[in-house]
Length: 129
Image (cartoon, rainbow, N blue to C red):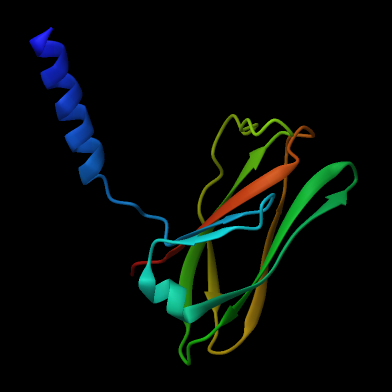
């Protein structure tokens, strides 16, 4: 039994050391925004979070505005969930790059490839060069 506890403690320690690569997370259903990166928190304004329908599929749209004078190179990835909150993507989409110019606005969006996808979550992170 002691070995199991040691193995469990080692797993928890490794998880605690894992680097969070997401700078911010936006939940389309609840419209909550979580910032894990203070730099992105000060440089980005979330103007709008919307879910629309396109030919029977959900489309998530997030409008971002730069609160910074320089260019911001970011990456984003959408995750799709059904009405019960279960993830419907069988394979994660790749991170997509975006450039937000100084004090400009852009919209990032994606249409769910699964017709059961109704709600989305998008993660945005700074692109390290």
